[in-house]
Amino acid sequence: MKACLLPIATALALLPQSASSNDSSAQLAAGGLVLTHSDAIEMRSEDLRISRSAVVVRYTFINTSAKDVTSRVAFPLPPMGGPDFFQSDVSIPVNKANNFLGFTTIIDGRPVPMEIEQKATTEGIDRTAWLRANGIPLAPQTDAAQAALGKLSAPKHAEAEKMGLFGSDGGPGWTLQTTYHWVQRFPAGVPVVVEHRYTPSVGSTVQTMLGEDKDPETTKRYCVEPSLLASLRRIHDGGKVVFSEDWLDYILVTGGNWKKPIGQFRLTIDKEKPKDLVSLCAEGLRKTGPTTFEMTRTNWRPEHDLSILFLVHHDIE
Image 1 (tube, one colour):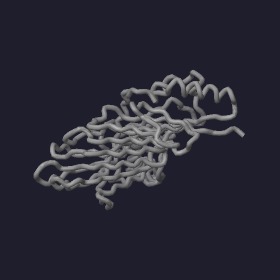
Image 2 (image 1 turned 45 degrees about the vertical axis):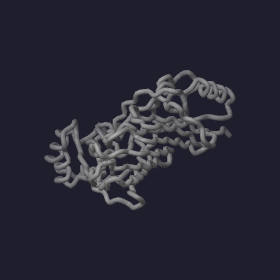
Image 3 (image 1 turned 180 degrees about the vertical axis):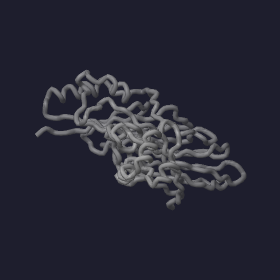
Image 4 (image 1 turned 30 degrees about the vertical axis):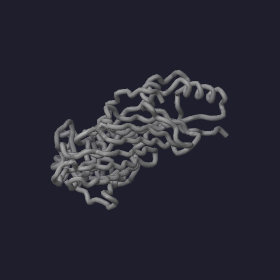
């Protein structure tokens, strides 16, 4: 875990990974909440905990002005779909058409009712109204969307083709952007605690090439230290253990539309299993338990996103 942060341009996008064969799966990158710009709202603290099972974020906001402030808060899901979506083997953790990360939020200990906004596009052109008018579900990853396309009349099918609504494999080819949002009141001088959690999309491959000098891209992307590479070489030579890879991205840079930098920031990475390994570019990350690592910052505004590599331990029988 080198003392450096590398620039990573994820921007809520579907990320290609170093392994692209049939024995690997891709991931979708998500992040935190986005607030409407306000010069009155400060983020006093952010406590972010990331594992392959769950991402949990707890924020404390405070309105430092003399008047109550009402602001819209949003959580954008990663874009879903695209012309080559069904050939990319994307990891979808939760079987819910409009909430495939299982996103939930509580405010001061109570669940918050949320609105949902969806836009389906091809090449940047909004096709939402056409899909709805023709009875086609907007979630491109669902069997219902595939079936509805198959029932289009010949003229409508031709129209859909012209608009690029079919992907390279003949299935849904549009991209869907889903955003959950709500209006939040921030009383003057009163802390507001917002906690949200979701199940991350985790990419994977069946065996790592690290330690065999065949994967410099992964070594650089996740700041894999020479000592870890040396350990992997010894393990490979021993022939009794193999490691597979899991990848998880988190978007830290999601606007920063609050008054000041984050007062107190804490990141906890949990690899969940003691024999697994983890690597990422994060300065000052320290081991705090058998499976946990922690980084803290004061008066901090993140400039880069997180890409995390988990090396999964497998004993050879």
